[in-house]
Length: 374
Image (cartoon, rainbow, N blue to C red; front, side):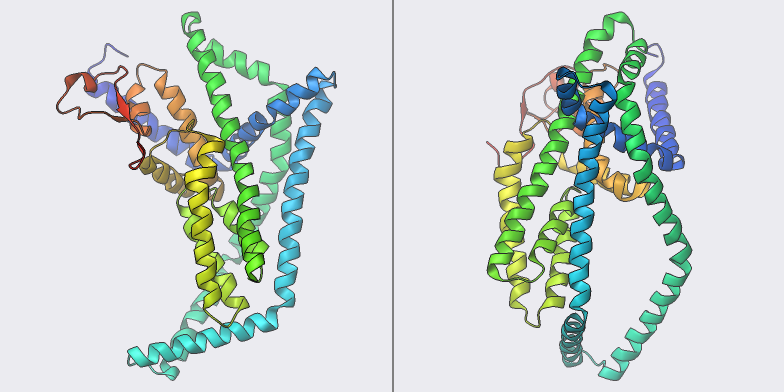
């Protein structure tokens, strides 16, 4: 391929990228469970190796970690079902609070615009009818989506078991793709990929735990209703880089509005969320995950939106670790090294426009991608 002209090589790269995206879009129902199982199986490798050292049978060494994951998921489902039950019991009070907030909003709109209460009610009724019609048309699709979720969850433990059981075959397959001279680099890339995925996913589990305790505990001490539910929802949504935090703030505000007739709890919730986010972004998370996943913010956000458009919510959650693995691979291949530079957050110490050495595929002095970091 190196004998081809530069334009031909770049065209082949772009065509390959387009073909890869097309394959993922077409086969996402098959690929996403496999990808999710791959990341979970890597996270379970330490437990599997520990049990193997203790002379457990191989099948049992695989089944026990899978059961731990299943127990963790079951606890999350139980928590949410319990909290939803509390919300259902409080429905009359929630309805009264929502009605008061709507009336206050209606009075405010009447004061600043020419729309009176009758016109606002007619507008709300029209939009409600539109939403009902839309909901009816999407009911069949929702049923299909729900069945897809059950299939997704049902396939995960099977894929995880088989990936751990046949991991040596998969590794041999990877090595056979490359010449023996390149095997040391391949081995290094495999170890680093495993390290990045484990540290990232385990770090996220720790992040969910401490954010739930911090946010939910502080809101509970202040006296905010549904404090734990707000904490868990925000902690889970925060796993989606940049976008999840915004959605978590909105859900926190909505839950607070439905449980209170005053506005001060909303301001309190937003203030506590901002404080916890500051601790998470600047103190806690950098020390837990460290700087192993060095992806710049631009491509982290792009990865989230592309992952969401290609594979839905699961694609958004997996976007960052997938991009991090791609960067590890790109950094170790001479042909695609420029793509690794594009994804990273290490900016050249000086402009490549002024120094020709910074335009070449070799290590250069860099500075942090974080603006306020010294």
